[in-house]
Length: 328
Ligand SMILES: [Zn+2]
Ligand SMILES: [Zn+2]
Image (cartoon, rainbow, N blue to C red; front, side):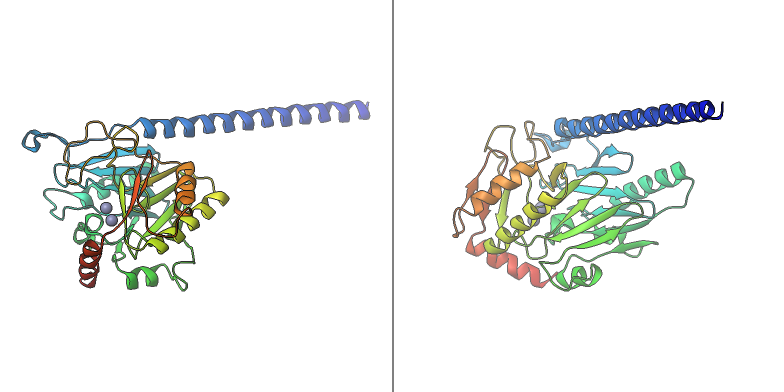
């Protein structure tokens, strides 16, 4: 009788284990399906893309796209700046990370701080918590990525890491730039900072564990990427290839779209209307293709691929860029 009872208990236990396993598999399946659908919606996303006549453009200054429960991609209206940079907002349990601030300083024209505070408030209400700290960092120090910093400076519970080499190395405790990587915590969400100089000396890329996004600023995006220091750029791309061989990268997301949806074709600099622009995401395979192309030749050489173009910066623009960087 006792043995029978033990056997019955064992059967009940095994049945519940099998059910738990099935439940887990089902929940893994559904979370895989959800992340696949999210990526697909990002791949198919048609962004606001300006107007032939900006006088009649009624799009908001900032387009806000919510990717998952706590990740947002913002795009600046092309009629405010032809650069139309993308800004990434990652919400952790304690902090909100804002990567880049955009090209138009005016609060009336481009109310970025207010937009971030609205998101902050929304998440505080959802969690029944207080507003989170805001941390503003930059993919690099070109002005279309930091011009809106003054809206954030001196605001309560906001840290702005200035877009210059000294501030970046100090804040992220870089002792061995650019070989070293470092990690910051947003609360249940860790972010890796990878130095990627080349397009510009202070460029970084960041990896988010939650979305598995690799955010590359102007180091890699669907457009014409000007490279100031070719050897630095090659090393940075090698670093990103190594990183992506060890971490799952769902998408590589940069700071602009300049390509059309036709292979190798791009909109000229200054374009304010891009009705047929390409999708924002690039994939890990694009990184590998770029890396192998870069390794074909030691000399700086223009590389034209279907989804983006990499071009060495000429001597005069390089000189101007160096002069500008003295004032940052
Ligand atoms: Zn840019
Ligand atoms: Zn740039």
